[in-house]
Image (cartoon, rainbow, N blue to C red; front, side, top):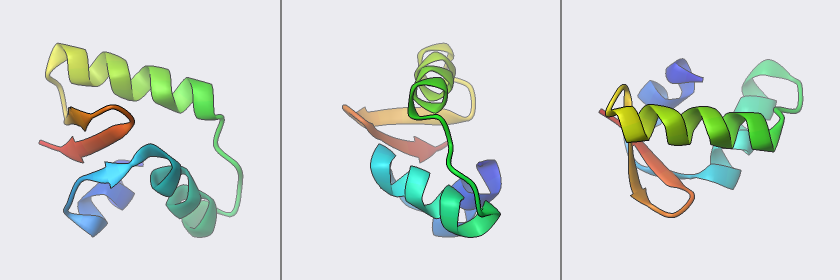
Length: 59
């Protein structure tokens, strides 16, 4: 996932991130698990920042 975020180098809407992960790795990512992980990291200030609801950017 971090590779995909680094690759685009801009903030991304959550559904777009899921689609990019599917295209790159060929499998469906669990939306709830990914959302929870990103929200936790954003709250901790580690690796990602929540720009607005369901939109994240890499720190």
